[in-house]
Image (cartoon, each protein chain N blue to C red):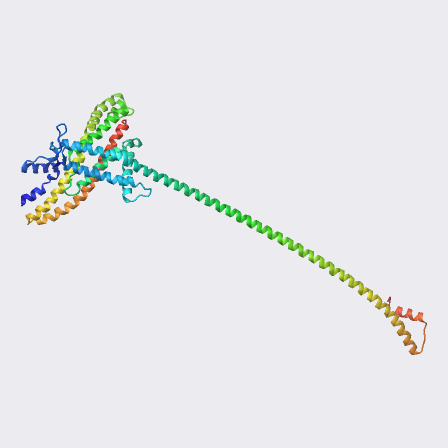
Length: 180
Length: 262
């Protein structure tokens, strides 16, 4: 590259002996003055105002991202806690429902048992009563059978033209009827 | 007619400094406002305008321009951290100013008819001197005489005779390379910008002279035009790269001032 530069310089120098512009010295003071002034200004403005402001923005962005992430983590934790609470309360509700159902079932069973016992007792009492009456009626009926049989025998004997003592008839009937 | 085109195609003409406003001399020095000063002023104004927009907007969610400004900020900060460590950040405003001053000057130079302020050795030389002065003054202020340990890197365990022999060779080399720093720093930027713009102008000139000459020139012109386009792309790369190289070498030199024993 320097070779090209030299060649170009030689070429232009050969034509009209024009000096190589970067090596002309008349503009050096002006170049130095303006470079110092402008570079200094740029440095001053950048370092004093612009760079701190950009640095601030970057810091702010970083911290806001960090705090957003923290917030998200916190909310996530809250959500997990809330879910746990819901699960616990659902389990409690299940237990309570089961307990209530068990209690109701026990109560109903007891009522049914009570009613059944009461009805059974009534029925038993009625059956006993009926049995007693049946026995009574049968005993009475049996008594009547002996009387009727004695009278019938007397009537039959009278029709046959014989007569027998009342006592003997009764004992005969008694024997015929078994124990009566 | 040929003379007119030759004049227009003179590759050195773009580097000529012309007075725009005569100013009264200060202490006998001519400080007239020239085209060089004008384009330097333009670069500084654009730089301030761009970054003050990015800074003043200051939203947590940036738009494109604000984001560009902030990326520039982060880019320079990372560059310093990477070469000079966290302590290097005390020079952040300086390196930032240097990088964007040169970048804007280089990019403005890419606009046709614009003046490239960084194509003048006096400008790049002064910037390099500023960098080296800061390195030396800060290095001495912070490290005292230990700063000169820069020239005698520690060699570890070694017989004393071997150390003497090695230092006899090493120290002069280190001193010479230190003295060469401002030269290489300024010449690199200056020569790159100068040579690039000469090449651009030469190939652009070939297009014009080729067409006016006719004949075989009509074949040369399109080739030169293609080269001009390719060189333009290259020069944009060089404009950014040289600003970056200048800034990162500044960081490397500042690192020497911060930590002289390597």
